Image (cartoon, rainbow, N blue to C red; front, top):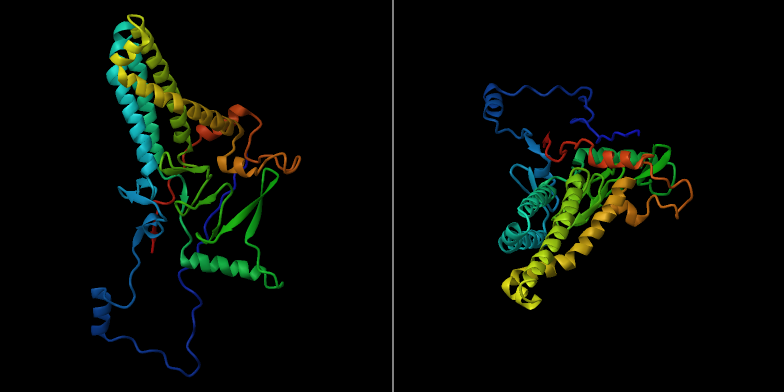
Length: 343
């Protein structure tokens, strides 16, 4: 599949050079003392620009730590709830259920639970703290140059100049919309998150459960998170039922509940969460196989209901396996938001 490259406008630092009017003598050179004071001391009127990372200049509503390596959304309360539910449920499982099942069933129960718990926590933290693919906003010079290009295209008419561009990807016309906040044309599959106030490449959705946007750079770990969480929830649910069943064989079921009251809490949490997690995993498996995003699926960007053959997804390959490899096994691009630039 052909890929399109998009670069931000690189404007020069200087404008047009004005020459002195005729008959006007050139300005005299500065005296030695003034030149020494201005050049040597660095206290002149011209301030030297220094290199800064782009997230320091245009952070949006995100919070950055460890020199921009860790990113958090402005509202992370739901993420803390997710973390608390996983840690508390797994903690009760390892303390109250695993010892009994390891003794009366098999030692593989705590081992499998530990491996699944490791995958869930590692993928959750990587999804939450990773740059999802934020595109830095245009600088004032870049925005001014782009405005000139847009205005010059609409000088011949009374209508305002268009704020869209059209590109062809695999024979399909794709419109690029102008972002009035970031002052740039969004690349294909890019959308502006209203909660984080940033444009994100291959924007899927903003997930409050992980406290971050899901985009080009963290969708893979997000899919691993919900998939491993589905297995972990179903595994704990089955182990708790087995635990209570084995205990009830000695007496009755009520006695088993009294002997292990923590298992009841795990059973309730897993029962009400496993269905939604399994449904979410199945939905994103369909998206991966189709090379779609949640944003495109909700908007129906490539739905056959909008038009017959012209609405085919230009990013989809002819094979489900190729789509899965393209989404889950492709290289992760470096973070553009952490790059250095002179400001």
